[in-house]
Length: 311
Image (cartoon, rainbow, N blue to C red; front, side, top):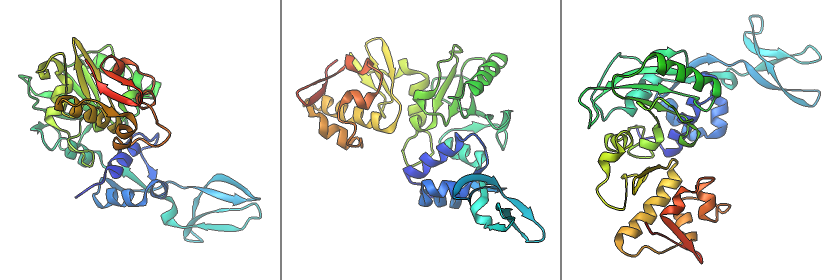
């Protein structure tokens, strides 16, 4: 089934939620169409109820627990006057991510072996997905999936786990955590990679074997000197350095600049590049587009409203 980029983004956001059980009505407020796509694709499945509602009582909007009343045959709560306020089942209906199906779709392009369903390594946080064949390796590569890695407590649990269970050679740990939010690990045989950063298409869950291979073995992918990049521009090899760029907009911005560079007409207007890459009006400079990092300035130059690649 076709999924929009917005649906993929919403799914990854749902994976990052503190609770594994989410109110469908809350997801609908983010994007009704994207939520319905995920429900239709069975990537989100029904999971009982999250019995919390916003109660309007004495003109104060506050969260309150909804309880089941056998007499009323409904969920609801009592207001300050003791009156029973019925809550529609759909308002508190919950759903959860089907990780088995989601991970199968992520790895559909790989030859994969392992359990029919992902096995929990840390409850609700880290899953063992099995192994995949990856170009550049002699043996199958173990794959885990982890979520909420920006949470220091979760990160500490993962770090402890990888020390207790080191891979023989390398391990790929896929995650829904944004690339810029993943802490640095001292366990260098573990490659922790955001799912969206290695997708073959922004509107699909399927991970590209070529892009993933370039992330795991960046040195093998360089063919041009002094600068080169992966197909999605998530990796840029400049001299002896490997620079990683996360986020669709940053990668698209780099693709635009590199396309001009390889064409022989490298100079582009900054405003046009930012607009084509999908940045809003508040992002009106390359410095704002790249945030706090400055390493891009080693090979991207800008002056008088123009920008270009100059290694």
